[in-house]
Image (tube, rainbow, N blue to C red; front, side):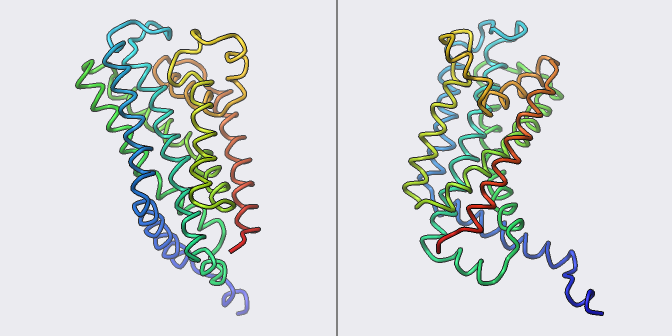
Length: 258
């Protein structure tokens, strides 16, 4: 009897998750400036480079730049959304005192973190659809539907550690400070991972640094969906990154000052 009373039914947990996801979506929309730049900046960059180089042959498996850019700039796009939006949203929640309410109500930490990550996914999907539309308009159909679908799934699933890292920062810093710190992390990682320019064009020290960055492994996982290359090491690297980021976000939430 005691065990039955103390155990919450799964439906109760799902209801809490739905409420948390809805709140997460509203929190992101409340920050239109961050959303504007995290979505339109990557799409604008992709449109520029695809217009200039889209029809040329790239460095990867003889694929045109329009196809490889969809993988590398796609990685930048989903990382930009997943790294910037959840963190600034929870930082704003902390400033408004909403996180204090959650801690008092004893909402499970896993539910809160999962909801914030899930709430950011629609915006990552929107970025990838915008990239795909630009690619079709500028260079035509450069990918088969199967390759495009695998690419989408790989980028969305592979972006999870960046959302968790974003939450860890947002649980600690203010909204303004979170945006500054996350931008300071995002832009150097994008350049050093070859998301804007092929790594073959980079200095040797950048090429040596790239495999240490999760953004590099996400872009290589994405490219592997187009080339059929083995992506095992990149999957392992992203799983490790996810575990570390999840531990950091959990620690930051448990030690939250509200």
